Length: 152
Image 1 (cartoon, one colour):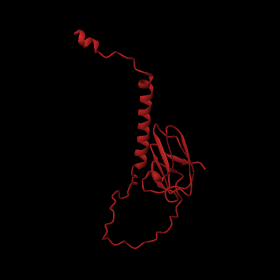
Image 2 (spheres, rainbow, N blue to C red; image 1 turned 180 degrees about the vertical axis):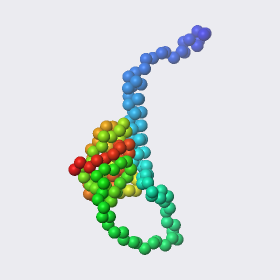
Image 3 (cartoon, helix red, strand yellow; image 1 turned 180 degrees about the horizontal axis):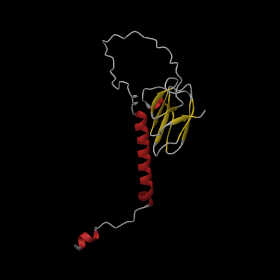
Image 4 (cartoon, one colour; image 1 turned 135 degrees about the horizontal axis):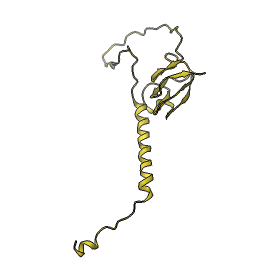
């Protein structure tokens, strides 16, 4: 290497603590927030036997007359698994527990439009979880939590 080039060589510097600690923490935080937002924006999974297709009405379609369905008479189960459940239809209000898993996300929902504004409260964690589903909640969503058991 010529003397001219040697004098313009960049000095070697030690990487600061920022490179080793702050950047990975920022990356992991962004990853977790992305997972939460992705889970919250995901669509509901249809139950077995239900029709997963959905078609939006066109402007020229005529609405079908409203048909009142009788209220369900059978008792709601005291346990349920992952998915989105309507409160008062698919699941009762009350306190529920699960043993959880490595990645357990749940949310109490005020409506089913899939927006972030639909979330009353939510949690992402691992291991055992407890949640109180209120009568005023529209739905409860659970992903990766396993079976929920009513305890109160």
